[in-house]
Length: 139
Image (tube, rainbow, N blue to C red):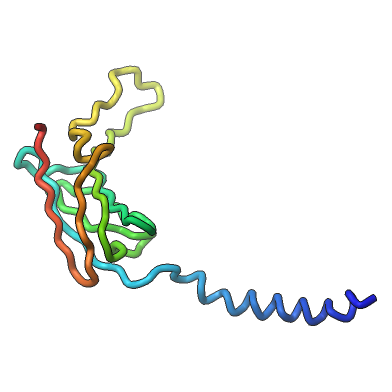
């Protein structure tokens, strides 16, 4: 019988907690640094490169280079930037789209592993504007 007495209070408490938590869902991250730059490969602008900045802790930021090799990191959806701090940087090529019935050779990554799966590239993002250019080489 005591559970009936506490039920209205419990429902009110849950309703207050639910309403007070609504504002928290909008942004679950702090201030970001704006990150832009250019990727070149053997001295030439490198289009369609996927560049990923991964912090020691937190959410990674990504971008795809344009036809001139330029990029601007995106943190989440329409929010540009990256978390401040040290980041591991990985650069790969976005494979070209193929039809479902494609039977030709599989895509071979032209960028050496030292820039992606075995990347030792690091950059430190600070609040405000940051520019990081990457000149990749085959060797």
